[in-house]
Amino acid sequence: MNILLIGGGGREHSVAKSLSKSSKITELHCIPGNAGIEKIAKCHNYDISNQQEILDFCKNNNIDIVFVGPEIPLVEGLANYLNSNGFFTFGPNQKAAQLEGSKSFTKNICKEYNIPTAAYETFSNLDKAIKYIDNHSIPLVIKADGLAAGKGVIIAETREHAINSVKEIFSGKFGSAGNEIVIEEFLEGEEASFFVVSDGNSFIPLTSAQDHKRIGDGDTGLNTGGMGAYSPAPIMNSDLEEKTINKIIKPTLKAMNDYGEPYIGILYAGLMIKDNEPKLIEYNVRFGDPECQVIIPRLENDLVDLLINVKEKNLDNYTLNWKDNFAITIVLAANGYPESYQTGDEIEGLDQVANMDNVEIFHAGTKMIENKVVTSGGRVLNVNGYGEKLVDAKEKAYDLVKKINWPDYYYRKDIGWRALKD
Ligand code: AMP
Ligand code: GLY
Image 1 (cartoon, rainbow, N blue to C red):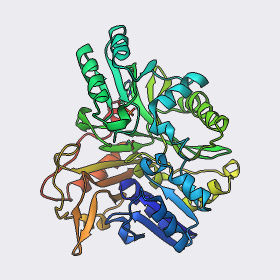
Image 2 (cartoon, rainbow, N blue to C red; image 1 turned 30 degrees about the vertical axis):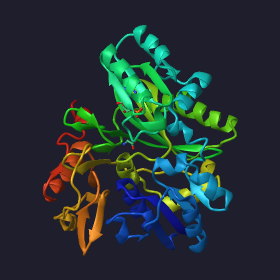
Image 3 (cartoon, protein in one colour; image 1 turned 60 degrees about the horizontal axis):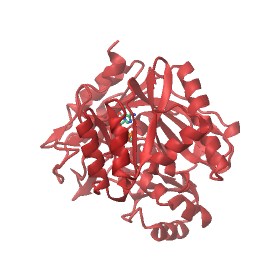
Image 4 (cartoon, rainbow, N blue to C red; image 1 turned 180 degrees about the vertical axis):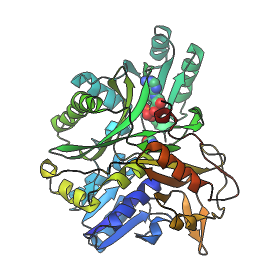
């Protein structure tokens, strides 16, 4: 099998590593990749939004499967383009990718299919939005409809904040992603992420994970892409998994079938759990980053085999096996992230991992310059630890974190705190 992986973050490094271990892989290519992926795949510096260039690449390299890591190419329709030209793409078509690309699309499905979620209304008119804010209790959650790099969600604690946020979004703060907004009820509870893989006919639940979205310890400060994660998430007991599958996942996949867009790829449900009941906060149409980095290493199956079974629509007859352990990942970021930060710093200590058990490093924003690994993004590395208990995995990961160095980096010291507080 020749596989092309699209993306260049920690998520893609964990996927690349797993693919590279398969006996079924002939060539592994990645666009664009990073300094870690470069060691196990052939990386190519193309624009992931240039569909023609990617199609030409597939033709010239006899690609059998394209695995799309990030959401933007999927929302732009890369899967439609490649599939219609004969290249199987692991990831949903453009319409189904609206589950992530448009919050109102998802909320409308929730309404139509009776999926538990926060009460909401959608608006494209400022006066109507203000009237809604005036008539509902605070806090309210204001969301730009389209993709806004994780920044388009505002939790407004006061009416003034809510109204100002709506005005800012309608004035173009998030470009056309803010032509429409969703205003919804604030949900209390604990968040967890649940993942399934779907072949268009049937699906298999993967496992759960918990991300840490805020920059600061104790879940404070600005939202980020994710500062650390662990899997499984102890809060997702089997009863909750069953409820999530029956009340949320199944009706959503049915909706996609009803719309003539059977869902192919990973579906990631962001959930709020309260009183052992799940509500849908949002969908993502791909693996989470950094959730993927704690899920993939726990998978015992050959990842290429899983992709082949999706391609052949054979998930009905396929079983996934998981290691009976915990995985945790700590994100090392450039100081200043998610706002402005410096790049180009040399990273030291990466070879320490060779002398340690139950740890692993995935690269995110890194590149090789003159044989040195240097920082090239906000989230730079993922340091993983594994253990029978979460607390062991955490200790392993943080021991390794201390051995890595570059001039100005930042990481959260409390990844796993919710699961460990009891
Ligand atoms: P989203 O981009 O929709 O995942 O939202 C980002 C984050 O905002 C989520 O992970 C939650 O922490 C928070 N959030 C979004 N919607 C709600 C809601 N209705 N109630 C409470 N928190 C929310
Ligand atoms: N870690 C959150 C996400 O990938 O959307």
